Length: 158
Image (cartoon, rainbow, N blue to C red):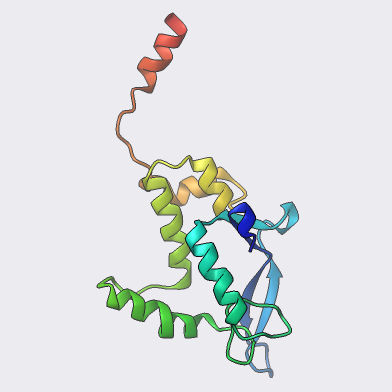
């Protein structure tokens, strides 16, 4: 986290896999944008402060994670869903049938629905191609008339 800059930086992603003959284990990967640098997403000051406070009291482990088991090991997404996110959604009267990827989808959809530039959403989501973002989320972009043709004509025609 970088509270001074108002962003959260994602340096790696976590995946769980069970290889033949081995127990399920956590594996870290570079982010999708690893070749271009780490993923950064703007974050409201209130959330940054909350995360910073949590970081000071969360269980410490050798992996330097923010969200961990009491022993400092990585949390499996099912544990987060079942013990935190789904109960919070249910308490708020919202549909609790959701997966971790739903958070990403909701984030991108909400930004586009409030007229955020698709290229800005592309940057936050890490999609390498704008066309990929538009293929998935274009139906969330408001389609009302904006008067852009008239404004352009006014600039061109004086």
